[in-house]
Image 1 (cartoon, rainbow, N blue to C red):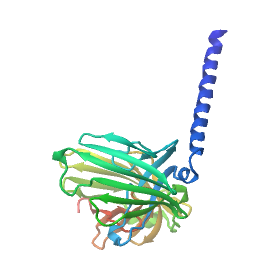
Image 2 (image 1 turned 180 degrees about the vertical axis):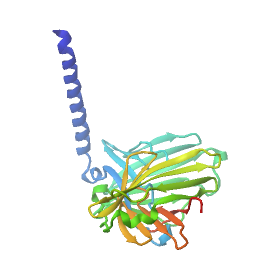
Image 3 (image 1 turned 90 degrees about the vertical axis):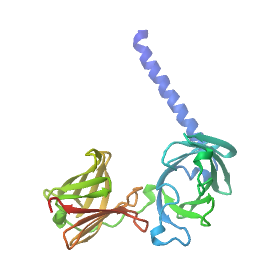
Image 4 (image 1 turned 135 degrees about the horizontal axis):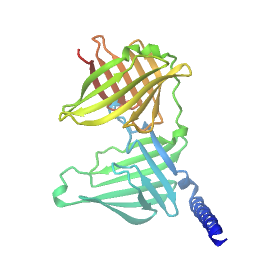
Length: 311
């Protein structure tokens, strides 16, 4: 009898413990000031609001996507840099140190007048601190009617404060789709080869339009003959338009909606994606294919040039 009831008792205790932990987390979040609670969640870059930036300079002041989690007395930041690690920034001014092979980063945060702000100082080894390197970065986060406004300043100073607007994905409007059928992209079919850099080649192989879809695989190979990247691609008909579906490395699919179409040019957008947000295919008069990925507006897009295999 005891052997039969013990697993059930254990499961009940675990369920109760889980409920208690969830309630404690919820209470800790609710105990924070209203303005601070509003910062919780994943944020996606929407618009560069830096004064004086040219079209080519437009871009996010920090990562295109980052996550803030609000805990009692602290903000957990993830996605602010290449490491994509969690950094717990206390709001009482105490220092959080993150140690890396050649750098120690020291974070100090605060919450005041509706703004979360932190400063991170970089301590480098003497032989790893060239002139002109950044000694510290200050970032502030404040909710506005338009979304989360992020301000970034650096030392040594460039004289410009970078400013960007971020929103939750569900608060970013989706684009109006263009009317099209899969046959409108017949010019994209074929095997296309090009160069990704001086050290690698890239190819995309698109099937002819059939059954409401075109399928493709992309592959990047270095000069030593080793594959570095691959991607599964689809363009499918949906609701009277076309959707571009990308799976880099076979990962979870990301969708881009066709928003512009001309006889030899197709533009696919997803403003809720961190990067890229726009993918453009264009066929030149000479029969060469270009593929461009980048932001919806401005910045410096990445452009890849292809020729038909064998041409």
